[in-house]
Length: 195
Image 1 (cartoon, one colour):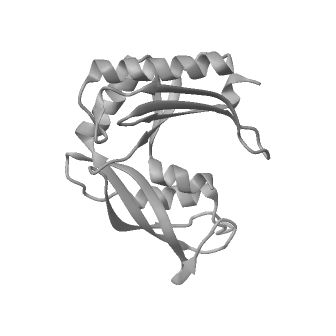
Image 2: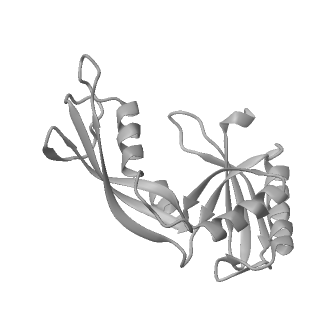
């Protein structure tokens, strides 16, 4: 098993901190190779209230998972949830300029990024732009536009935002525990993607 085949997830909760390490290979189901669980003393109702206690909890959970899988863990996907999460709807539009007018994965990424170009209050950060549906040249209701032809690609998205201070405090705890934050992921969304 190569280290670059590993996905590390970190859930910092009110009662426990959990670190899960999975081996991911193309075409196969992820295989759990390490799990670490530690009591959480620095989080109340999903909010960091004690940085040092939260860092210790992260270090303990990550250490246990690292020992089980036999690799040093240096980064993780960090799950977030809580009352600070809000959502709103948005949309984005781009022109398809390829000579063959075939929509690519890059085009889908560009239109999703265009939908994120909305004004959010400075105390909020966009976590996700979840596509609800696409339109190609005015044809609505398209679910998977890659490979289709057109000149104009639009997307309707559901934008998920979180409070900057909450997210910064979580990131601070993770980095103080010696890890890089690969990304912050809304926990209910991650759960939905897993099934």
